[in-house]
Length: 557
View 1 (cartoon, helix red, strand yellow):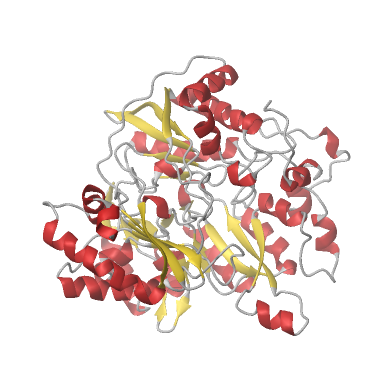
View 2 (tube, helix red, strand yellow):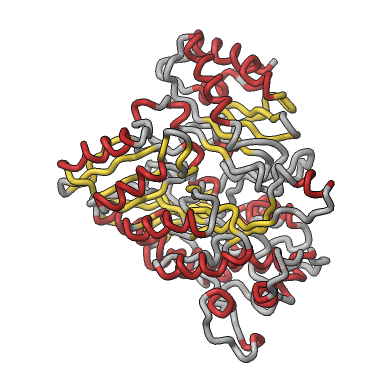
């Protein structure tokens, strides 16, 4: 075990929680309670939801002597983002019965509902489980939703990669019966002291833990931003094994240089049969040696930064019980957004539909939610959510392609070719008004900023240039801004830090260009750099690569 240190308050809450029970059940049964206690909101994360309040009206309610307008954000765990038509229709129906009339595709290929009041949590979770999905482990200090390249394929080996994500996810689900007791009316354990978490232990992990599984050469899930990145080794359509990366993570804290975004590092190569035991050994090393005194230093990336990869590897080998094999050298050739029509084999097609910031809703004349529900009901496709908050509508017959496009047009949903490349390839976190960590806007503001940037590029003559743009309302970095070609990270109300020079392949971190730039100055700051890019770029050079080659500090002045 790690050297004894004073535990953070969250560690004490977990330790005393009786395997994530706390007083959650008592609050649920209390009709006068509108929200959960300070201690229990640390535990509800493990069950799949965060307690929030509407910050747009927080000040007004405080002035009137009212408590905050509490509600929950509930997250559905979906390994690889795979969802049947029947499951999608059921998820869509829950938008009306439990949330705010919409749902949101997450940056980790799941679904979130916002605005769920206390009395509707249990029915929502029960319905999610009825359709063979779950919320347990979607949040909290455990392995979160396991990501995978979502594109459907007839390749046997690539299909195995998707299956691998599900197997890894199932293996790391918490074993506590508290979830079934509280939400699914399961039989109550007589003595919770007899329960046992074979992987996590009674205090679970020091911090959240993220795993992703990638096809070779296609970094469409930002593999280097995960605590464990798993890259398939496929030869002649045979899955030979995996290269395992460790220690990625994007979050940091403004002004605290001991926190930073870090890309994962190669650890080892493993056979398919040994993958889960190797991953379990990595998780257990983080469990036993991760920082439990300071949550800002608790991610796996900081343990590896402190130890170095060689010492970390030796500790993993102790737990695994064998020597680890040297990792393969990885090569990346694309980050595939999969937008538009693609053949998936066997005469079937899939359509990649960009969804701005992942928000599935009907708004004005654009009725995206109705369009997707109609497609699900009429064509019965499989849905696959991407790491870019988009949806792949799969298993479409050649003869139904026109019908799908006509449905989108009927409900005034723009087709792929009608959306700029910059907008299609952008992401934002939820931020205000619901996220309690947000310093400024993200999801609500990015569309406006993109319109201004599109106009700027048109004026310069760059037209429909590919630029990967990401925005977050704070440095916790839920939209993975650290690898973007152009990123905006909330610094204070109405102002952002601006970062340039990430790689479109997701293999390089960007660099800080300016701090605390007001919204109204963002485009004017960037215009000279876009002009320089247009005039001095090399053949087919991407914007992020240009900024990196010339130097961000030099470009920013």
